[in-house]
Length: 423
Ligand code: HOZ
Image 1 (spheres, protein in one colour):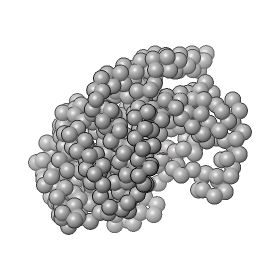
Image 2 (cartoon, rainbow, N blue to C red):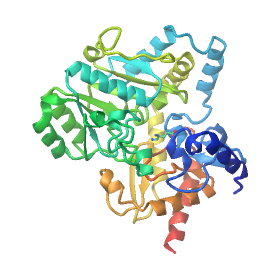
Image 3 (cartoon, rainbow, N blue to C red):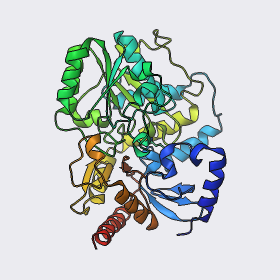
């Protein structure tokens, strides 16, 4: 596979952009080699600047539920461009998107639009503090809620991929407000609340973790978090930036039947443009300025183009509820032939193949994976035109544009890799 143009661009990029990328995992440090610079995307495929084509299982890290250049999004954006790109004043389209989110996500009675998942989680935490008058946050090791100061403690995603100490640049006073405990361990949550329950403002969790690889909640875990937070008057925040509108129209909270107090959303609700949101019970959301005293603002919040793309996706989802059956089927098919000796975690259209024989239920277990072998797997797939996340600690995503043939081919290549690796 020729990668000359990508190599040249990467060399240039490193002169001007730290590490040559604008978000760390993209640099391929977890797997080695040169990141592919992408020229275009269409449906399930991306093409790099050397004209290599890949079946894309990153989907822009989640947003492309309908695949690249989905027609409803492109049509809506083309029309919207004619009207202007940003006004810094309210638009009817923001109201429309808010209504679509509220209609779909069980916990969300009111919603505020922001620009990134980081911003959504940061704002939700601040709101929980303002609402409860308490300072502490409980998070789970290996979960990642964006690069919010206090939430980088024991974070997954790029922090895990690069094995970085998680608090460089974060004042001790901020990280001291975070209690990080293992995912999927309710006893630890009980203990923490018994000891400091009256100081805890919020528990924030990815209901299906995606940033230590895909790690589903154990049966009863989310229900347990709901019960304990209710008992102690803490705000339960589901970070559904990855899972929102991916696992079902109502996200993981609908799938598992647990309603948090606040929810953060991102990725799919922007249809590939920068967009995120936080929302929840009206009583809590009414504390956000200017309705209430908890301040949060943004010049490009509710940007008309991002909102237009979001509306197009959410309307499509509303009109086509059957997409979730297709996504489930494709997800199941993708990992159907993964041989023993590896651990597959999958919920619907998000999945991770862990290079370990152990079950992976938390970050400690994810870290048992053979990351060197994962790197070989990644490059084998890439060499066969399949673009998986370049880190053991990320989830792969499918879209409705992935065909049965795409998945069957990928499945064969995964099986070939395993056979060759065992030989
Ligand atoms: N933090 C993202 C994955 N969990 C990576 C985002 C990106 O590199 O675009």
